[in-house]
Length: 345
Image (cartoon, rainbow, N blue to C red):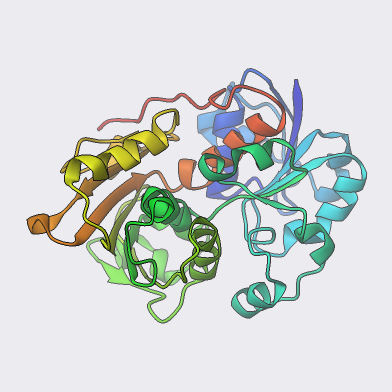
């Protein structure tokens, strides 16, 4: 059994980790930390976990995280890098759901996250946790930086096209929408029901933290310079993410061959569903599951390819992907504990 600790168990990604790990056949939950909720039974805060999780929250000082095999950080940026050195020294593996170990360039990290990186030496050995693109290195990793939710959709939506060299990498557009849970579980005016409901808005148009992460990873897939316009939007739903990605074709390729690029790339991927050409994937078709669905369009058979990508931002976009990485790091079947059928309606 894998002994698991979670730092920061009171947020949405934390409780999603608990939901997935509570029924994982190879996991023993050891501790879940929260200073504010120290001593509070987890099931009292999250009744959905009654009968599944019998632990109480514990303060970080009393959590004995060094006794775990792996620790997940479902925390704000900056927490994981402060605690990772001691855990790694104790032989504990680290999976960070924040941004501490995503960006390899510390100057870029410090620009976007407004804090110094405290362990650049460990950053150098961290692995970006997108299994479909980095499976081999994740298997041998001690530290994994879990991808952002938007970057997951954009990278998997563009990877087959960039690898094949059939699009203009310098002129990519990602028009993305996410539910309000992507902002985290916090008291904030913009997230109040009366503010977010019956409303639709863009944000981060002049620059979003997920942009440098996405460009850094896309640049590994092509020798060409990557140029990406990325605009996120907030939509009035709890879960779900929909990314509409536009790219200009630079080679003559018919729709059958275009579809084949994606089907061949993801034919053995358990959590990527390439739908028929011209399909319209819906966010509800992935709700509460680790599945990501992709569909291709080519308006008027012109030189623009449109890639539609949907996922649950809390599962494949965050906690589910982290569990997927854990499975790889400990030699388990990648799908273990993650084969949930999406919730409908």
